[in-house]
Image (cartoon, rainbow, N blue to C red; front, top):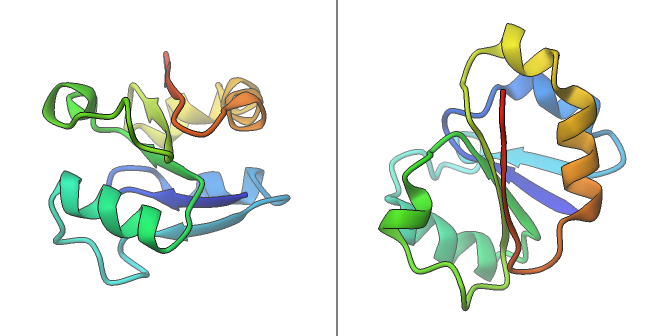
Length: 105
């Protein structure tokens, strides 16, 4: 699975998703894109999943018709996220195209 980390997603999390290809919006030069633009380009570039910490994304963008799955981490704190690695990994494994899930941190 190809995963794109949005700006607030802690990069060290990628070390726990080793069976997937993980890129960041920053690495791709997309850190200045607005949410709708980022979703469009992620889909165009054939990403399967966007992982973000933007809790307002579902209110700002129509997500229902998008093939891109979205997982929202409800914190940007790496120490707190580390305690939920197993839940994040499980969410990545069960996500379906167009799916949306929030992970309580």
